[in-house]
Length: 304
Image 1 (cartoon, helix red, strand yellow):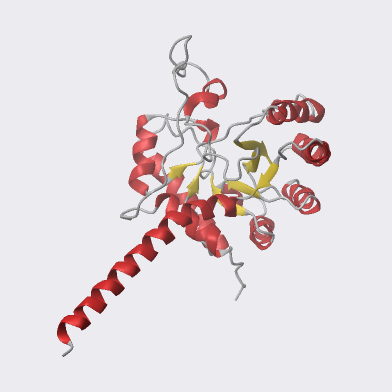
Image 2 (cartoon, rainbow, N blue to C red; image 1 turned 90 degrees about the vertical axis):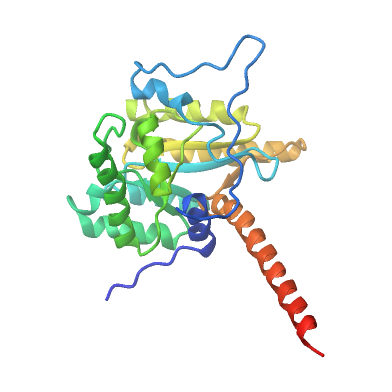
């Protein structure tokens, strides 16, 4: 029997804490949305705009909450894999830079193409400390299909990924970053929470790796809190652009250290999960103290 990899406890527990249905535990506050300014209220997405124009403002930001350290923090995420041709090279780059990521995977890749290679890539992701998440079966536009098919796209992919990996997969990202009341209601019903992004260089437009890296670096130069970067582990552009970005961060952090400035911290999905575990652990600890106090009071009342 094939040995299944084990995801670190905090990543699994924290992911479950993000959206386990029927859980009466206190949940962390949602990240604040953009506040109105003196120039007027924050702009809203144009419902007639194509997804790539809507995605920047569709979901609340910062996508992964506020910085835990107070430093600029960056979470790397990759969509659409795993690809037998490119994902392994992305994993090589992350390993060289000691960086971790969240991979939002599509279910079809484990049923067509090379399922054995796809499964091996997932096992490597988990073994090397990355987190896997749900990106539907085949990148469907979830706000444009009927309810049954939407449910199938979400739960079908989750079932495939959990069968392949042997770990719970409750994190979810909608293709194109689409958002609509129907999708939000479905995610709430299924106990899932959307995991959006803050920085999108849109390297899939094939403008070249140096252009892609420059777009990311421009955002990181002015980053003050936490940001989630979306890229695609299925694109050759990403293979070249990613090390340019990571090398820049390393060089920039040396400069910042020299001048006493805050570094740019690369954070992991497990760290995000741990932040969501913390309130649950505190709640459990408090419940245990209350139960122990009640037990002791009961003993005092019954003992002579």
